[in-house]
Amino acid sequence: MTPIRIGVIGGSGLYDMDALENKHWTRVDTPWGAPSDDILTGTLAGVAMVFLPRHGRGHVHDPATVPYRANIDALKRLGVTDVISVSACGSFRDTMAPGDFVIVDQFIDRTVARDTSFFGTGCVAHVSLAHPACARLGAACHAAALDAGITVHDGGTYLAMEGPQFSTMAESKMYREQWGADVIGMTNMPEAKLAREAELCYASVAMVTDYDSWHPDHGAVEITDILRLMQSNADKARALLTRLPALLGAARAPCPHGCDRALDHALMTAPDKRDPAVLARLDAVAGRVLG
Ligand SMILES: CSC[C@H]1O[C@H](OP(=O)(O)O)[C@H](O)[C@@H]1O
Ligand SMILES: Nc1ncnc2[nH]cnc12
Image (cartoon, rainbow, N blue to C red; front, side, top):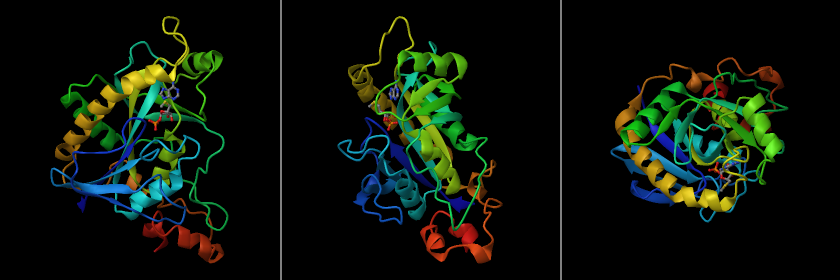
């Protein structure tokens, strides 16, 4: 068993975590630049927890310019073992209504202009992403949501779009009817990919704010609809998060799905061909396998 440290990435509407005890905002520097903001460190019910507002306090970063690599590196550097991503999303299903939560288990990545990997020339790696979300952590989030009285859906496919504009109606219908996506947002990719590369368990809690633009009874998604739902969704997210420490405990066994060992066989570049400057940047995310 190893000590757990829960990392929460708060999306639109969730910029702080009042419930943390002994908390203070900490600046973390990374080889990938500065994270979205300082990181709030503290404890909750005796369990170590940190909180990072994805867009920064005051919502400074747009979905494309969120420094995803710095964020994940910083969480890893702080000893985080389990990342819970909390995000606003649109819904492609009548049954997934505004106010509902979805524990995402699959992603379709339609982002186009983001740094999607810590690795590259000088140290090439290929991690498996068939199961991009951690089922153990997702189950805990599901149980916490149920306990908090939230209407929650166990599993769903999240389509990550580039944004910042919302989808056209034709795109919305295609994602829903042809591609089988359940929800849509702009931020969970490359975040989930990077968490896997950093050997972090990652679960995504998607909070439905709207029906995107496919629904004949709801018309086009507007930011005003989203803002209307965001506050109550954020309150529910806080209720979910405060229940997690009791469910996860202060220590954890190795991940049964191997998230914490994702790099075991992933490195392709021969040791004598690896670029020392590239390796230096990987000290936190790949330190376990690079020694
Ligand atoms: C505020 S509406 C669009 C915006 O909200 C979501 O952000 P996050 O995933 O960080 O909650 C969505 O992905 C867009 O970035
Ligand atoms: N319909 C939508 N599309 C993309 N991102 C969203 N975030 C919240 N609602 C969204």
